[in-house]
Image (cartoon, rainbow, N blue to C red; front, side):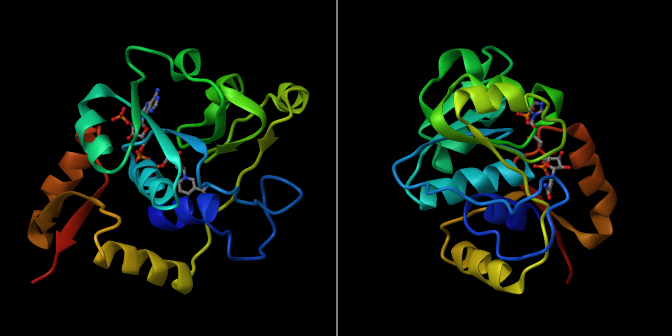
Length: 197
Ligand SMILES: NC(=O)c1ccc[n+]([C@@H]2O[C@H](COP(=O)([O-])OP(=O)(O)OC[C@H]3O[C@@H](n4cnc5c(N)ncnc54)[C@H](OP(=O)(O)O)[C@@H]3O)[C@@H](O)[C@H]2O)c1
């Protein structure tokens, strides 16, 4: 689901289901050569979004807590901002696209670093600054993820080629409890794999 979410926000929506969040369909924007900021960059959606944006030729600014910097740079982040030390919106500017995987009522703070004509894609609900977005000439758009075999196949090819990586840690199915405990500790770096012998 994380991979499909990142894909449908950034690469191709790929379905014509009604959008519960807005009157029209979500439309991804071109990424090549663009400055793309991913908030929540080490999470399930975020770490895939970083890699897909990089694969598409974007300049990627990753926002996460400091422990994730090395991983995110390995995954292709060109810049890293530790949100526990610096609010990202205070230190970047001229951003073309913000993908905010955290979202909620605070997502409007990302209107400031966006250039006029840029786009803010909140992955979760809560955007409440439509008037300011219109004044700044910024498109705000959301999508609800849908299943897609074709998109999963495309993601599978990127995984097989090593272009995209997803694994935080691997546990045998019998140790599913420990896997849940890993999730509960938080600050996950990607996804957990349960192996079945
Ligand atoms: N629209 C859709 O169809 C759709 C589909 C899938 C998911 N979602 C939603 O998307 C959201 C993200 O899902 P996910 O699976 O990626 O979650 P996740 O794996 O739990 O990742 C969330 C990330 O947020 C980071 N974070 C926490 N506080 C932060 C802050 N103040 N500033 C910046 N980053 C912060 C955490 O990183 P640190 O370790 O750095 O703190 C964590 O890596 C969820 O709300 C989910 O419901 C929507």
